Length: 381
Image (cartoon, helix red, strand yellow):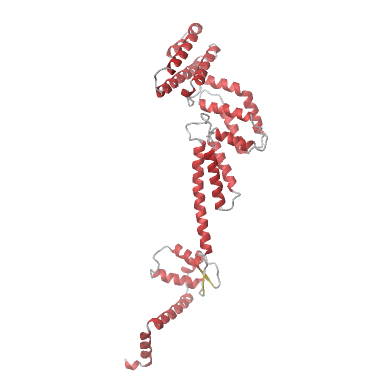
């Protein structure tokens, strides 16, 4: 390959043309023969991969050097010969062809010339199709992005092969039909269009579909169904858009698993709330203010084994109702807890005093009699 580069890029352009007519065809044939011998050699798979990747890199760099240094000043059949060499490598040794290598400018130009009319037809059809704006934008941006010819921006053989594959797929679909979007999403998913814009489109489509479901159970079932669809969808080999990113199936299934976990948490929370609401509340004769005062006394006497007042208020609010309020909020208990007045304290004190008298009467009768005697005959003490 180095020898061919010296032949094609000498200092004297006229001499270069002369040498090309004499030697280049023969040198290219020698390269093809060397490739064929390598395939039938005892070389390992790893060595063959490195060998053919190295040759593709050499042919690509040579074509780019010619394109930059001799733009328009060398015979076009040199370009054709180099392109034929790349085509032969891709077609005959596809197992060792580096799809992720950057394409030479001349290869990109030839492909765009071949696809020009098809891209024009597809672009016009997309513009007037009934598909969602998000998907149309995604595809139109892809066409615009990959068809841009530039010496500075290079795309891989994989990306351009994907473009070629998708163009032919789009030509086979009636983009004006109502089922066009659904069919196209399936095709792009099978082809592993792992472009971030399409991934975001798929996320938003699933999120939009969740709006129609009112319960957490329905949302969870829908997300699980979508995850199953993604995991069961087959992928075509070697048609992915960008190998530096995970496959579309991997990205979507990972994201859906996260959404399933969130939906499961929401469902568990709904079940807990429903269980709390189904527990019958115990009616009591005291007011919310009196209840808050009792709670404060118990709290300050360390009767509760927790200092979490929010938990305490939530527990009392969820299990009791007063004669005036069938539903007590934790917030109302908290408000009364911090604003106890003397009137409320007096009513609670009377209640506690009656409770103490009842305790004495039921469990300490001797002390009750002794206290009565002392009160009746104070001079005896």
